[in-house]
Length: 355
Picture 1: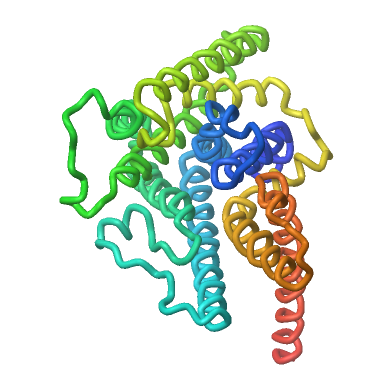
Picture 2: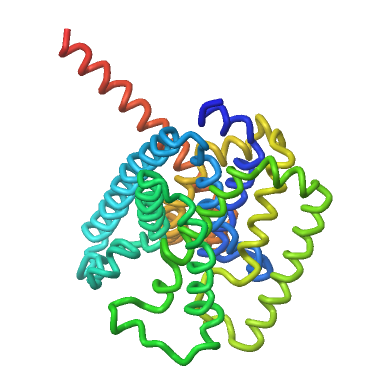
């Protein structure tokens, strides 16, 4: 079974990706009772990395390298387009609203390497930068037949994430500004999230038969409930003791909970087959992640402000996660179809010229 057929046969993972895309939107935009979703919303990014690792792994050495190279090329293209898009949006707003300066902050070289440029509302694209760097490290390990090194990097990266992030109170205060990084960037990058979660995905794919023999669906359900409860308790403890400003995207039980959810999906691979959720996860979840800040700040925010200015109708109530998700989904569907149409027309033009 090739990688495309393999992916199509596990629709449940695409349903999970669609859910994770919505969870990412909850992180950045308000939602009634959204605060209570916090213990679970942070599974979203690790889940994206984990599912990618699962799909890209192969026991065939050459196929593994080919999968990683193809994913790297595609991600590089997507990243360039994404940053170009946000730059053009920022330029448009600069010209229309006559802002004093373009919102293109200046950072250190290390910041750009770890998190990428922050153009307008594009700071969330750190995920693409981290994914590219994770793929590069994985490709190097694959070429040198040391892919198991990634599994050893898993605990190291996770421990660093926790000690720099949610559990930084264990250590004396560390000033990361001396290396040109804000603390939250030091805790959130390819080393501390990308490689650990991706490595878990690789490990699950390599050992899935053995895992499913040892862990029945019932056991995985029980583990999922247990880790969810522990994540809620951990969240409440950290909130009470150290407040909401405690730096860090993931907590100790985030990764175990994510693993359980992925394993649950693998127990029911055909779940959601042919559904809208599966389609959203398969075709649109990455673009929803990329463009949801545009969907919220521009489609819902700016357009809502213009409607209010013209009609006096208050649209602030629409500025919430579900509305942003739907607006972004509509945008990416139209965007992808426009891109496909442009590619088709371009290929016809080149074919005509060639004749």
